[in-house]
Image (tube, rainbow, N blue to C red; front, top):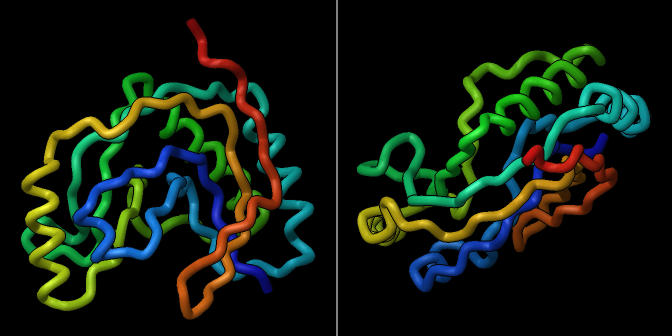
Length: 177
């Protein structure tokens, strides 16, 4: 079994407040977390993703503002928001879900909320740091970037955190002008 997710790359966000919350800031947007998948399914999964993403366009995203799950007053996960003016990210999520569910994987049990996870919050001191960061950067624009590909990523959990290794990169059609 290997732990997998489907994502798109994004720029890293560098804020001094985050250094005390997380050792390293992730640089991806998860389209679909798959969890533990039998290694023999990786080839089928890759082909299904390539098939359903054929003709899908990349797009422009903006990383903007901070928030938290379940809510800013009780942060457990600190995240950066995304602005997707064309809605292409929802289309990619729909296509990825179609591919994985076509292989018999269960549908997600929650709505898609595109974001960049910055830190998992444990302890009241880190909650306070997260609340202050959210207030200070609630509507700040951190980066604008183009998404050129969708990645199938293996995630290996270690004591120091997760190690991510792309297994497949599926190019997207250029951003329409």
